[in-house]
Image (cartoon, rainbow, N blue to C red; front, side, top):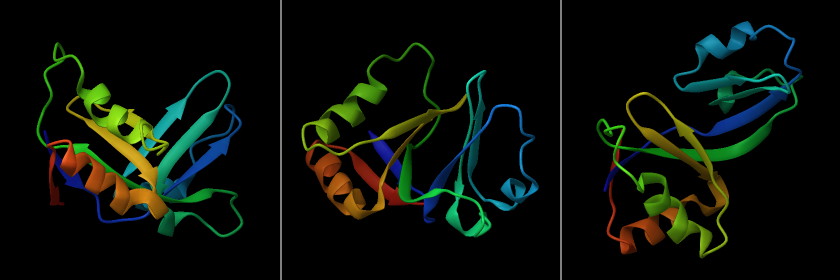
Length: 125
């Protein structure tokens, strides 16, 4: 599978589900917003998060290059299984077109190496 590395460090922020989406999010080159009845979670560029906001920094991401057909099984498994065998935790974010994997920055190079050895190819965005 061909994968594309995002250049920026990401962070995740957790809020109460009732708060409005903060304005600073819109300054991020990448963001993923998920609101449920239990929470509001935002993944975005670390650089846009104000210092006063509690966030978990130190994440990096890559995505499957190109559009993935909805009926193609096993995409996330092909990426997550090799990382799970090496105890690398992940977040997955899916969009209409593709899937993103978010891994701890301090294990990112190791994750790339593991996936390359599993036959995946990388390019930089």
